[in-house]
Amino acid sequence: MKKILAPFCVLWTLFFLFTLAFPAERLSAAEVPNPKLESPENWTIVVVPDPQQYTNPRNHERYWQMFGWIADNLEPLNVKTVLCVGDIVNSNAKPAQWKASSKAFSFLDGKTPYVLCTGNHDYGSGGGNTRESNLDQYFPVDRNPKWDGVLVEVGENLMGKKTLENAAYQFQGPQGQKLLVISLQFAPNEKLLDWARSLAAGKYADHFVILLTHNYMNSHKRGDKRGSSHPYPVMKVDGLSGEEIWQKFVRSTPNVRMVISGHISAADDFNGCVGWRVDKNDAGKPVYQMLFDTQALGGGFGGNGGDGWLRMLEFTPDMKRVKAYTYSPYFAQNPETAEKAFETSAINAFEFEIE
Image (cartoon, one colour):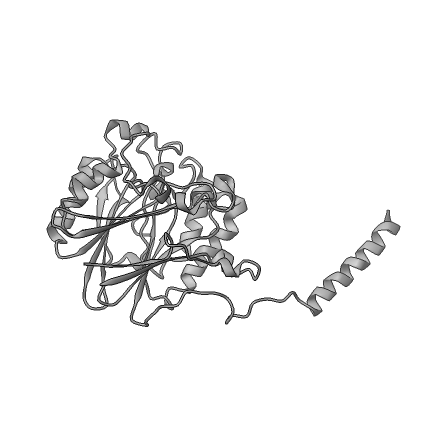
């Protein structure tokens, strides 16, 4: 056996030394495709799709890479906040998955005031069958120092405890604009809508409000329609669908101008992972509604977690124009896939005016 292994070890050593002397050709920093602001005065919101599949150990490297990239680009892209559309884990009952997501978001702690949204997998045994979530154990309200002065309201969850499941975050635009992001837990009931309305129509009535909630609208493949079914046990009790959220809260609250959601995805089909629609509210103002959930790209729901895709919303200083584009730092870092780092189809790269 030693006679057989000896030549093999010599060959392996020579190969290793050769790779050190002649490393594989890599992209230089200047060649790596990376987003850039159209104007240095512009600012960005980063949207993170459902990260549940990234909590699988085989996908952790992509998970850390995504959040590491966001952390490295907070300043170059003038990122004001990072929004996660929910399903932070694949199973609420598995601590290892919560720890994985906790580690990913730790890249942003102390650097930017990110906003979390809970999905159905963040409750019960992982399927939205109860209202019990472990979110607060891993993401308590005092976790991120950058929430100081930004996290302005913490509401009660449906178990009667104040957590980040229902919370409001206040930001200021470069020209003094007032923004409020309201995060509502998966399938909120009318009590939670009343709480959100009391904020948007009360103390923060002069703010541009973005609603972040997990289950709201369907994909482009399904006609970009708001959801109307009640497939989960809690929804059969009092949880509301996307259409009900629109009818009971969004359309009647004049300053709720944008809704961002996740939940809906489709195996290796971008048309089934994103959605976009604009509707006038009762005050005649357009409401911009977006779905972004790429978790099933890159091998389906059991694949690589979603190909590392992120959605950027780049605002002009006057908040009159927004450029939406879709970028994967996972593709960007590999010379063989770098040309795919920007998804340029019309459903993934577009602009809109805010009236």
